[in-house]
Amino acid sequence: MIMWMWIVLYVAMTLVSSLLRPKPTIQNAKPGTIGDKDMPIASQSTPIPVVFGTVWITQPNVVWWGNLRVTAIRRSSGGKK
Image 1 (tube, rainbow, N blue to C red):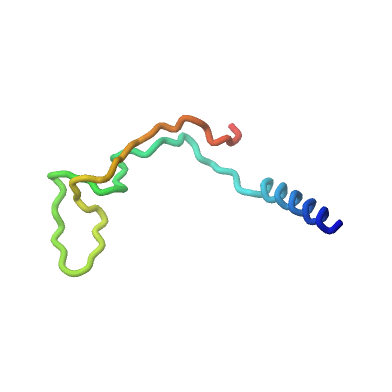
Image 2 (cartoon, rainbow, N blue to C red):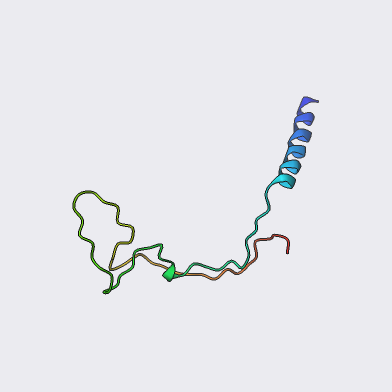
């Protein structure tokens, strides 16, 4: 008998939490591009920083950065429209 009460309580709490969760407000989602400046870029016009000691370089100039691919978003997130 106690096990059935726990199952009913679990289902009820799951329903309440799904009704009270915040709704996403994402509009016009687009895939990321290479020009987003969130990865190192190889460019001749970028100045080479001269660093002494230990410093975090926010935008290093590199020659190669992994196997980068951009894929299109093909399905919706399932939210209400």
